[in-house]
Amino acid sequence: GQSLEQPSEVTAVEGAIVQINCTYQTSGFYGLSWYQQHDGGAPTFLSYNALDGLEETGRFSSFLSRSDSYGYLLLQELQMKDSASYFCAVGTGRRALTFGSGTRLQVQP
Amino acid sequence: NAGVTQTPKFQVLKTGQSMTLQCAQDMNHNSMYWYRQDPGMGLRLIYYSASEGTTDKGEVPNGYNVSRLNKREFSLRLESAAPSQTSVYFCASSEGGGTEAFFGQGTRLTVV
Image (cartoon, rainbow over all chains, first blue to last red; front, side):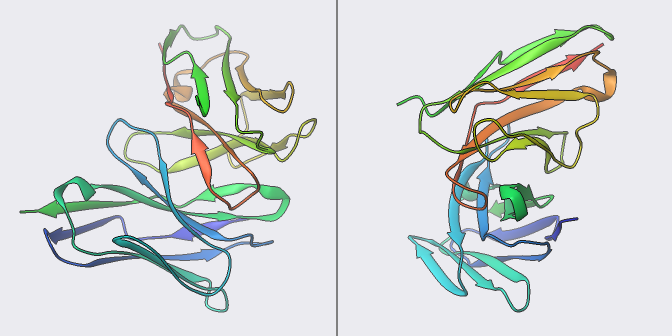
């Protein structure tokens, strides 16, 4: 089956940089993606990596190493509104999309 | 552009009752998914459909059935609701597995 591991909680201060790691075990890998979810809301897409390397989208960057089954989400210049849960997800064989258990990020003033 | 639309947004059922959650997307996506999310937990895949006419079980399919009615619509049915099925249900769609997925607003279901 599929499994993804990410830290359950991370705390950082406004303006700082935080990295959220994700390791995965899966079959038929079709890419690693990241989602943000505010309390009471629906997940929203942040980034997607199909190939090794770094993808940058504004303050957010995502990295993938397929040989290590590892990726991370990097959030720069943290803002209070970045307080949310962040999920990594992998596309797997037969086009399923499996999510990790999520990392709750708390940004403090 | 509506994206992914789920109905209803809220529902209370008695144990043993049945109901169908509706989901429709207008982005011409091939893949559609149903997830449940329990408090403080991640999203667990119930069922998914890689294309019109196909459905596959996910991580937690017991107690649920699905129908991919056409490319736009993917419904989730609870035949005999149980308190353990109290959860928030999300429908999502994407062009293909692993790529950007778009989520509906969620259905908050309580089974008493």
